[in-house]
Image 1: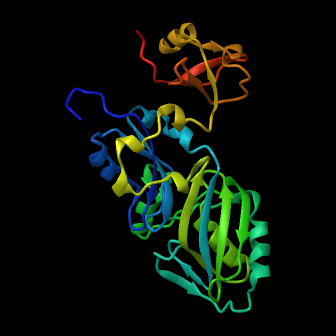
Image 2: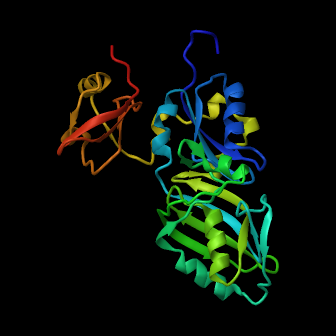
Length: 296
C-alpha cells in the first residue's frame, strides 16, 4: 500500500493453526495485507484451531458485532486428569481412576450443562480484572475469585470414546462460553476431573470453517466486503436521500429501516454497500453506532 492511499476494508475468515495466538495472527495479517488496521473478534487459545474473524480497515470498527452470534466447537474431553489451564497445555493438578465412567455418564453430565447456565471463567483467560488479564495473574501464581457469568449452551453432544476415557464433543453455545470449563465441569460431575484437548472452533454465526483460509494464504482478494461482514445482522436498504442523512449521522425513524426489531441493524445504500450500523434509541427511533459512509 502506497503511503497516503486508503488501505483495504473487509473481513477475512482465518483458519487458525495450533501454536498461534490470536495476536500472532493479527501481526502476520498486518504484514501480508499491508495495513496496521487489523483486529480480531473472539480470541482462540494458542492450542486451539479453527475460525478466527479478522476485521481489516474500517471493519475493525465493526468487530463488536462479529462476536454476537452463537459459536460451534469440537474437541475431546479427557477424563481422569485435571490441568492448571483446563486443557492439554497446562500442568497436571490432579489424577483420578475414572475407568468406570462410561458414555451414558458423560452424556448425562453434558445434559446437565446444557441450556442457560452460570459458568466460572478459567484463570488462564483474557478476561480483565482490576486492569489486568487473568492469564497474567495466573502466570504469577495468583488465583483470584471470579464471578460466575451467564452463558447459554444450545447443544452439547458427546460421541463414542476415541480412546479409553477420551470422549469427542460438539458444542453450540453463546459468545463468552469456555469449552475448557465445560470439560472440567463434566469431569467433576462424573466423580473426578477432566481436561480438554483438540479444541477447534468450526463456526462463528454463519462464518464457517469451509470458507476459512490459513493465515499464510491471506490476500486482499479473499476479503469479504463490509456488507458481507455484517451478514448475520438484520439489514435493510435505503435510498440516496436517506443515505445522505446517514453520512451526517442523523437519527432514523424505525419505518425507514423496514421491519426492524431490536438491533443492531446493518444499513445498506442503493449500491449494496454498508453505510452504517444503527442501534435502538428512543421508541420508534434508531441512532448510528458506526458510520462508514463519508459525508459529501
